[in-house]
Length: 334
Image (cartoon, rainbow, N blue to C red; front, side, top):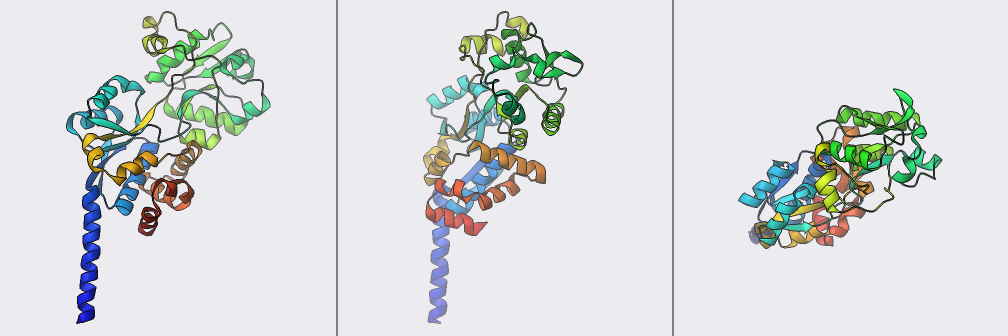
C-alpha cells in the first residue's frame, strides 16, 4: 500500500510538472504558410515547443498578407515563422512601433534572397563571369533557342510581381541593345524545367530565381552579384517594381535586400518566456534549408515529415538553439 501511495504521488507530481510547464507556455497557434520552407519551419516549431517546452500548439493555415492582417488586427495566430517583409515593410513597421507585433527573429534563414543565377558548371567553366555586368557582355554564351544569335535571359512567368522587376532591370542594363532576349518561361513549372534541363545537360543558363528553394538546393545554382550598388529605394520602389509605363528611366541596381522575419503577437511576446528565447535563437543555415526542401520534393514529404527528418538528422544544427534539457525532451518525443 505504501509503494502504491508513493507511486500515486510520483504520478501526481509528474502530471503537475507537465501541466505547470504547459501553463507557463500556454496555447500557441502557428501559421502554416503555403510554401515548403514555411510549412517545414512551422512543424519544427510545433514539435520543439510541444515536446521541449510543454506548449499546447495548433497549426493554422496561413499566407503572407492574410496572416499579417489577422495577427495585426486580431492578435492571432501567435507566431508566423517565415514572413517575407519587403512587400509590407511600412504597415509592419507601424505594427512594431505601436507594439501589436514583434520580430522574434529578424533573420531566421541565412543566404536567402532573390536575384539572378547561373549553374555551377557555367561558373566553373567561365570564372571571368564574376558579375551580371560581365555576363551581359557575353550573350553568345547563353544562346536563345529560337534565335541563337541572341542571348536568353529567363525571367518570371507573366503575372508574377518579379516579372515587372526583371523587365525593368533588363531595360536598366540595356540588355536588348547588348543582344539579349527576355524569355517568359510560361509558368513556375516552365521556369523550374528550364533550370533542370540546362543543369542536367551541362548547358549554360542565366535568369531569375530565389532561395531557399528546392531547385536551388538540388542544382547548386550560383547567385551572381550584380556588380553595381543598390541604386536606392526611390529607384527600386518608385520605378523598378512598377509597370513599364510608370518606370520611364530605370537605373541599374543590385537586387533589393530580401528580408524574412519570424513575427509574433504582443500577447505571445509577453507570455512566451523561454519559447521566445528559442525562436530568437533558431537560425537555419541556407544550405541546410535548401537540402530539406530537396528532401521534401524528392520524397513528396509534407512539413510534418520533413520536421521529423530534420530533427533526427541535423541535431548539430538545432540542439544549440535550446538547452540540453529541452533537447533531451525533444529527442525523447520524436
